[in-house]
Image (cartoon, rainbow, N blue to C red; front, side, top):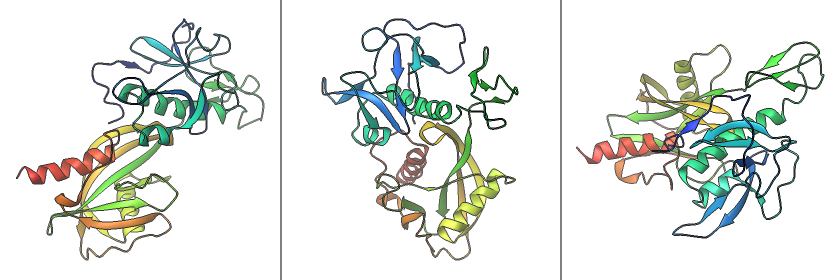
Length: 286
């Protein structure tokens, strides 16, 4: 999954005293786009991020996190700054679908999109409307006028693998045209105010597929920065009539699929893909 970066180390704690050094990564984030220099060197296409010293100066940068001891910074004027010469803004989905970038660099991009979007949309205090300032010691923004303090937002969401044990099938979905890449997925949705995560599982399955489920079992979690999510993966079993009644506003496709009908996604970044392939592979090992 996106956070599984092997021997590489990702340090997400805030470091208020660290200073930019030559060679550090700089993230230019505009919505879902990041500034990269595409390359075709080596056995597969990749991309480079701007570097302090070589591509951009050290002034006005905001510390994000560190990868393998190298600090990663957010460019000044987040959401507005033009990328340096030789770099272009590319949607993170394009980088993923083209298979560009090492696993750890894709993790940097996804997490930077999350934090960059938070900084860009919290320039002003939601309480009094005054400009916000960086907190001295925390990853937070604080209003100098009224003291309102805002921390990065996390959106809890679920990934749901709906099983029919009687027929040895699970539900595969695809989002409605134009929403996301046309690849197989599972039921997904955001947790609503006043709702338990288990109730969210039931509601999302009911809304998207018209099914009732039980035997809801937790599997694993995943950060998914490009949507600001913290995802929780669940298994569950259909109860009663398994006929699908797809919500066409949300989905373009919903089918019951057996193990030999699950190709998986083109990469191993998502919790969705891991759950689909785990279910498939466990059945092939029987």
